[in-house]
Image (cartoon, rainbow, N blue to C red):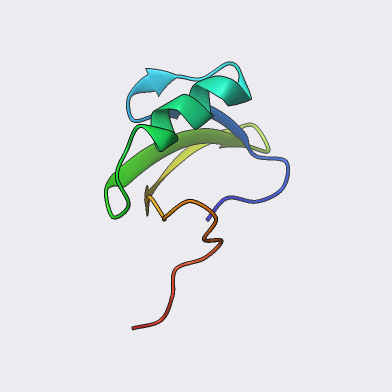
Length: 63
């Protein structure tokens, strides 16, 4: 999971330098699709694959 201070460097295979680039990628996707985020935490490169949620939803709801 992402933490405060993580720096996202790629999303869905695209380089990210600005928040607007990340927002454009995620908002072009449909809820339920998955996006892989690559990020740096404490100098270590990591990645996580997360589902895209409907606009405004903050967390995955329990089934």
